[in-house]
Length: 469
Image (cartoon, rainbow, N blue to C red):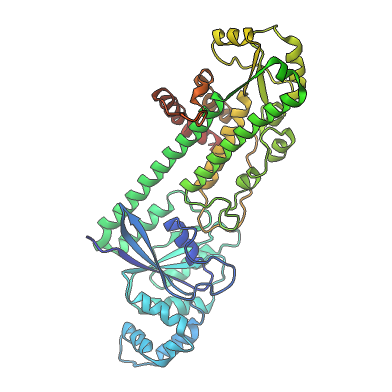
């Protein structure tokens, strides 16, 4: 078995080393991410696994805190020794266990690895202490790949940092924001590393290929999960007698019950998308997304809540104003009085055509009313889950701030794509047994699976349309 590539992750205190590793390994529980300086006090190892085996072993190191003084101390050691030899002399001396203990842990780790990622907070001014740190790292004679972190920030000094790095022969630089990674940033990171570790190129290429395959599988699984939600919601049906439906409190309980059932299904879908991307449910510190934060308490059927969320449909018409549950009035013109009363209760929603005419007639003869989920509810559910998916795709596992990315008014192309997605789930309306968990003996059927697969194939197009040009 090929030994894992060993990478020391080094840099000044609070440059984002642990944050980078959380994102690269998708381990939100690794280490501690904090604004306090010097949070990491010991060298900690974490593996990136490919096909069940450790492909890369990262060593998270403490922050370099006093590089200037340490460089002066090492410069005073044996002048005839090479830079790596002077580093080893320092590590054998008392200072390595005293005033420079943290720096010694970093340099000791660096001598034992194949290469190092030098994580730099690009917002920091280029000060003498950083030059001293680069000189110390270069003295260990290991390939160093600088990783510019927080480059999206308006305060980024990227150009100044690149100029400094070039002065020390570090011309290959990776731009990587651990809180909001660029698309393809991981692939580029490993490919750039391969230029420094040519004897490990094949192994690093496999890592990059594996990451791409994982991303494709994740997108497919997310598409399938969203499709399952839409098929589930479209197939949901609740029946009640005409007498029960005519009683306002009973009717409201029935409607509220269906609303809660849809909300719970949507919540489970959101939780599954979180887990699929390696986030923890309700992790407000590491994975706080406004979409999720609002979803915990948001009532999808409450018009004002949806208006506040900024989900709009058409020319300034809030989707929330039309969201609700509709009653199947069996046939046009029949039970008109009951229909009018219901319309007043749920905001004037209209019947959707909820199944074959034969079933409607049977229910009419039995004096049975049906409740289902309106198309515009499905539209909102689809838009919400897709916006969540977009946020997760660009969410680093080190992010600690909330993302101000509430869904806004979809463009015309996005509305069409969402409508097509909802339309694709329509066959489920004729199959109430397709609602997952609708009975104690509920089982997946090949027909339902085929519909879920068909809806899932349309999810990427809707997602791309929401993202815009």
